[in-house]
Length: 185
Image (cartoon, rainbow, N blue to C red; front, top):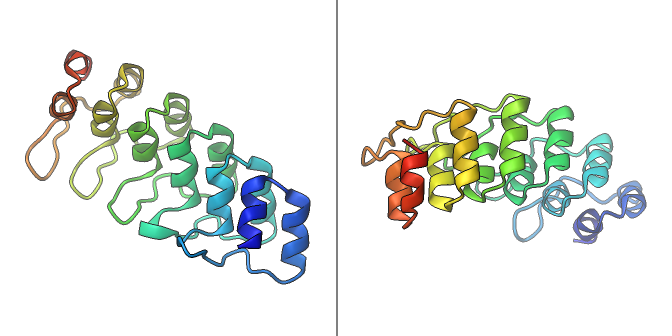
């Protein structure tokens, strides 16, 4: 846990020291996350770069199949997202439920991160296990700017889920976001 805490705090010197002392940078904490996940979630781009340079698995799985890229995307840490992709993180990798980093960013209305992921090559219409796409999650989150951005970036506003034949506008209406029904048509 000492390495996890150092990673989350952004103390690159301590991270390097702990790794030299033999701490395993790919060891999962009790929550299932690795030090790289903690650094990514805390927005510590320099620490992320140091951990990968020292041998951390940039695509190592945490709980529910989440990678550090999922965590950084969901938290809106654009600099970490860019660093992870440049370091070899798989851009369209799915968590256990089939959601990719773009789903996580859209679900948390992380507009800048959504735009960066698509710019880096993320599939704007990637379907999760239930057929839900990033646009579905943005509609549920209720952020008009994220919904508009995804549509502008090429998301199919009429995409349907596998279960229930629901479109993004249904998710917006279900979340009580009537103003998004027009945006997501």
